[in-house]
Length: 268
Image 1 (cartoon, rainbow, N blue to C red):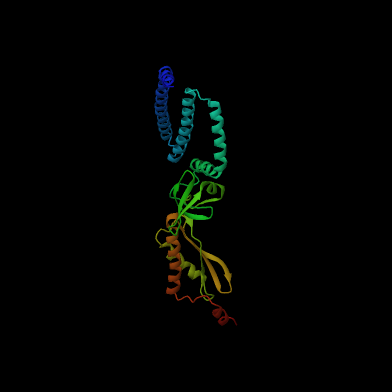
Image 2 (cartoon, rainbow, N blue to C red):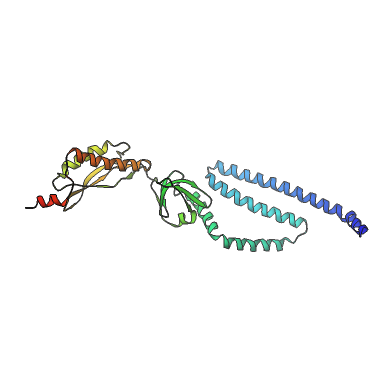
């Protein structure tokens, strides 16, 4: 038994040792080449000003494919039937793909978000009924910070599969407010005073200019549409300051509050 083992080692040991050393060398050289390919692709895409997240996606995918090819090549060097291994790998890939179909869908949607760029980090958006500022566009999910300062993570498949409302796409957006006047208040005088007050609110855009106009009439009196414009970052500040201006102008001019009592007093 011992002599047989020694004979096997003396006859086959050198060959096996050479193969092991060769496999290690192939692995080291292969990994170096894969790293070099990744660096070359990164440099080429960066020169063309491709989005950094998309570059990371592409390099990651190419790296996985090249590593699989390297492993298959090393197994073939050892005499392993790589066709059987490839078939097994394909079967595993199908099983994993079926189990992770949702994640793969999110991954693909993330790539489209990076390529088509319906929004970018920092934009105020509404996606999948979630409103907030975009903090991160990840490989599988997009992260928002909503107005309650709560982190909301939405799968990219849901982001790309639903309507996307980007409130930062235009320089300014309109603030829509209503001012209900008492039936005894002169709407023309109210419009003039509100127009002056709103134009003085910080961060209100003058292009287009804010507007105050008659929206409708109801039994309580005239309803004014008060519509300043502001950037997405200043929207809520202008919204609240406009409400405060309406209340202040009403108080300074002693406008009575709309009520059914006033209607009854003015009815002949």
